[in-house]
Image (cartoon, rainbow, N blue to C red):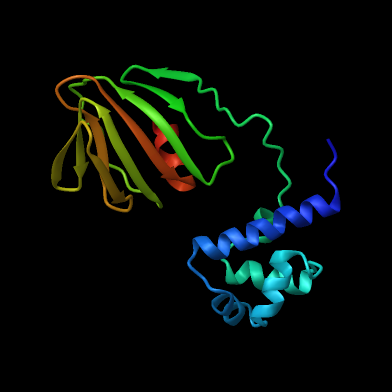
Length: 187
């Protein structure tokens, strides 16, 4: 299905307005950040002014989004992700996000092991939520048990590793792109 220029403009207008609102920016705030008038931004958002690069570039910068993201024409026909199971001796992993996503979501089932994994560092940030069981999180010299219904959030420049604690554990993990490369390839 071909996308018309008008349909793309409508999507961009909606994205601009939504981004501005989600960041808590008034028209004046956005205008100050983009160095243009609030009425210009209002007219762009409502369709009363043509969208052109001379206004789109400063607006994208003001809203902290790149032009590619703002202009992306992506068909959302199939929004369902069908995770594929990947097994290793100590874990099973299901990718819950698209491979090109900026933030990666995984479901991981950790099996108990007597082997303490080596702590590593890498650029990025990690977050996980324990669905079932408990996880022993090693953060440098600290050992923290994260139980069912609890979450952990940490900077990955701190040496870290994790393992199931006392039995199998299931977690949902979120990584930024750097964290994803390190954790998935280490397994």
